Image 1 (cartoon, rainbow, N blue to C red):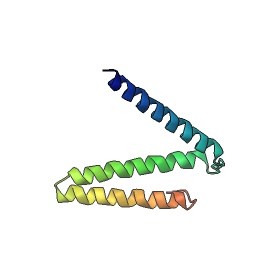
Image 2 (image 1 turned 90 degrees about the vertical axis):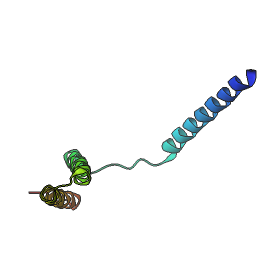
Image 3 (image 1 turned 30 degrees about the horizontal axis):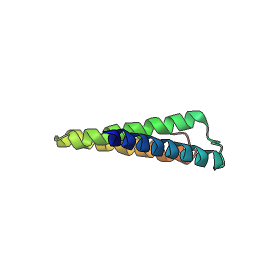
Image 4 (image 1 turned 90 degrees about the horizontal axis):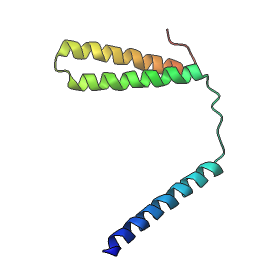
Length: 91
């Protein structure tokens, strides 16, 4: 019966060792400064989230007219993402 508890202790120690290893790796990597404007970063994240939501809607929709509207919206979101990534402000 003592063997089951021993396995848990081993698993916990391996998890702890892995967490410590990841922390060391993070500390050793040089930190890259994100020089982008925080507002642009937020906008890009928002656009990517919107695109993901539109993809889910497209996959769940069966009506062709609704699919066309969603595709148009996705194209607009893609255009805005490209403009933001290029450093231009989308209209």
